[in-house]
Image (cartoon, rainbow, N blue to C red; front, side, top):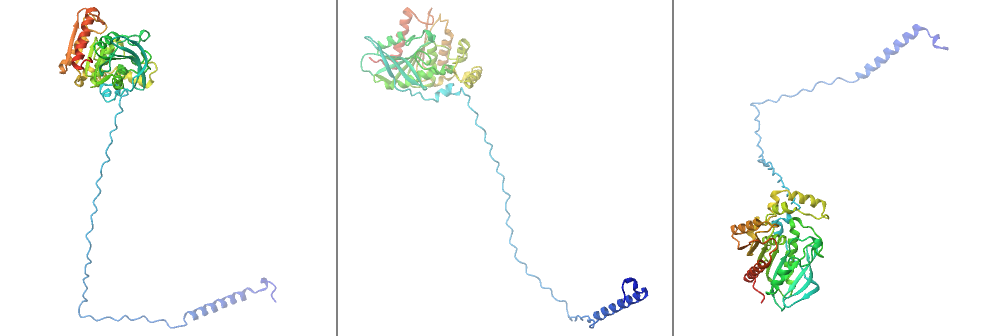
Length: 374
């Protein structure tokens, strides 16, 4: 009995292990050689009398490849940005010519007086979203009467009253069969206040009064003349370059038709209430000689269709006589119809015999081009 591995004889153990190893190897060899080894398969050689013909393959028709043209690159057109118009562009002569001046209904606020030759009314009418006041004087009778729009000169607003600077001419014309209209203009009288860049606000008010003539039963809207003194003469000069509805124009001691001269003498003028952006734009335009060329009516006389009559005194210290002389020459050069009268010794407002002669010439001029109402 073996109680532990120590009781086994070392030699016997070694022999027993050798015997066991030999026995296992013999068994493995016997299993590996249990069948005959396979013989190699003989490959039979095929006899040939000549080389085997190689069949020429029929070429498969290859379709002609379609050449896809390389797409032509069409450049994306560069869009030239439209320049932003100058904010003052609407107040150039071209800009003013593009506008309409329809006016509206003339409203009679009150009857001021009645005489043998006219009835005077206090009126208002619409202009550029403002309400503008003024004076209308109508001869007795049913009409229709030719109409003369009278544009007053500059008078400080504190001393201005409706009809100031135009009443004498109005009464003279009424006595000769003319219906007269005198605008107070914006900011004068009881009119609303409004912008007046390059004094074009006054022009808008004058032309909207022209547009309102059709609302007067006694007026003939096809026979409209315009008369202007001093500042009002400048308004009239601009008006005839803008609006062909004016059939005859009288300029009485007018301001220059060249805006730089007007601004140099009296300044540009601007309302305190004007928007800041427009103040800057106006300043830019006022100091631009090129821009002022475009606001000056003397550069656009080719658009004048109305005959013009100019009156100036040699002693005028408010509107230098050369301004009227220069406009007369420019109208002649532009082949426009113009009459030019100089009054020796007369100042900015004619007096005495010179006033009477002046108004006789004015009435004769309107009679020839508008036709008297009588």
